[in-house]
Amino acid sequence: MQNIPVLFDIHTHSVASGHGSSDTITDMARAASDASLQILGISEHGPKTPGSAGSSYFRNLRLASRKRFGITVLYGAELNILNENGDVDLEDSLLCTLDYALIGMHHPLFSSGSASSNTDALIRSMKHPRVNFLAHPDDGRYPLDYERLLHEAAKRQVYPEINNASLTPDAYRTDGPQNIRHILSVCKAIRLPVLLSSDSHGKSHIGDMKHIFPLLHECDFPQSLILNTNPSLLLHILKKDND
Image (tube, rainbow, N blue to C red; front, side, top):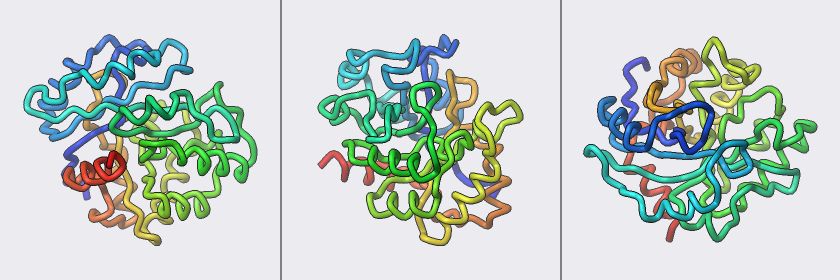
């Protein structure tokens, strides 16, 4: 499992997301090429995140180059869920112009409730166009009913992310390892593929999944259920949503 071929990383952030990174999309594409990735996805935080890109930034991505340093570049967003209704911080008409979106709960924009109410909010947010992935659903500050959430995600063809940044020694999210074990167990049982992500802010960690691999091995998680080994499947998933 340590030698799993990670061929793309689509949860990454450039200088446009703030958070102290000064790296541009060009810098990140060069790093992705150096890491032998085939696809890089840029997914800036939604506009409600302090210091992040505004709606005009996302609107202009349709003009951005899709080939850089020999790799394919996709443009998405990491949306903020704003309330229990599942509302997010980009309008659907703008989301339709992006390649994909991840949805997640972020402090202080979403006030955590019970596992049931948090799960309801995530499920409702799946209605938005281009929502393909659940961003770091491992965060213990936002308890979830994983069985109900992941069964509903499977019905809607939305895929949970396994986030490397949730497993680092300095991770600010809580309970990452035990929650990821739970997610992997449910996904293995229902044959729901997962997305591995670096959540790299800037170029430094693009393609870095080293903290994920031991858990995949521990859970005996099938390589066939890891999306990052199959760029063609990823593009098929995204194309299907765009049709």
